[in-house]
Length: 434
Image (cartoon, rainbow, N blue to C red; front, side):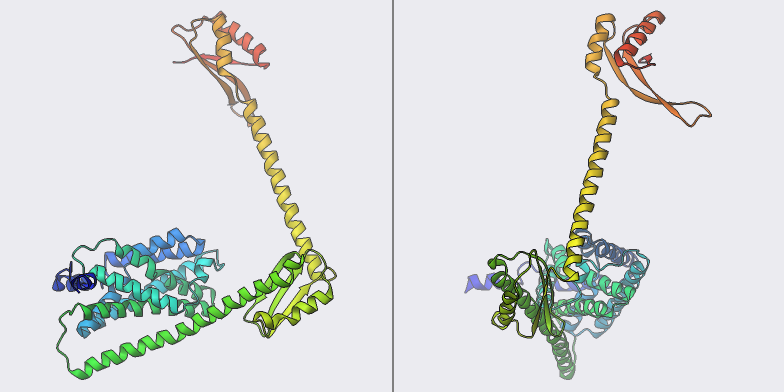
């Protein structure tokens, strides 16, 4: 029993309650540095969503100060401090408005309006997001109440992900897609509410001293929390069920195609499904023509795979659609070949340029040494020269040598003549290294 008590004991390592509460109150404000950090975090998150960069989005989560007023609200509910609750909610609403404003302005100005995968991930919340927010919030508030804060807080910022759905809501406003707006705003609300509820639970568990209020107000708080939880849970469960049904549909489609066509020797080159249409549809194209009897047999077996009210559309060779599909594929292949050939030609050209402008300095030094032993090092390369009032340039090999004494004028002339023969060029310049 002692072991179990120590295992679940949150009072061990707990910071002073008054000190913790004071720290929470200090973190709910969005003035001064916190406001600038918030605005910058919103901009970073918006850019990360726009360019589909997970690393940038994680960075925005880490620097975001949005957790402050949410945790403050949870503490305020837990100790029945209604002035603190009003202040926390006001600051959270201000932060939310600033987040929507800044992200909307960014996406209005940004030339890239396509919905990337990081944006799409935050438009359909479900019960799993509720669980992540609640358990992430538990970890966060436990860390806040510790004497040594440790590593959990950055992880909580990433797991609960407050900033990305808020910026996705701004994206929805910017492009006029209100399904994106409401979906991501609902996810943001889920995160805020269940982090707050997790905080409330830990504050109650640790027995923080509460303000003196009458029993009716205590009941109002409990009823209000229950109503909000149900308000968030019911749609989340519905969305989770819809996601489950959609994934089950896609798995059934894959099983159907594999069993009825692929294992029968038919190669699928195109597949498209529509879960939201009425009826649901499966479009398939094959590399070669499939017999009508095979198609009819497969279509009759759709209910056996859990695919009732589903229409099977086969794009055969005789149709314009499949011909267009083949043409598009061939055009893509040809375009890729052209790009590869262009790159290979460019590489060959660059290699020729490098070879033309590269000299075997070691070999030339050995040969020069046999004529002028005092020369101990050389560097030779092509140099471009421009004449005044002439836009054209000319390239001349230039040899720079190092020796204790400079070559005499006649020796330099001999060296130039020898180099012209050696390099098969009309002109060569020779200089001594200073």
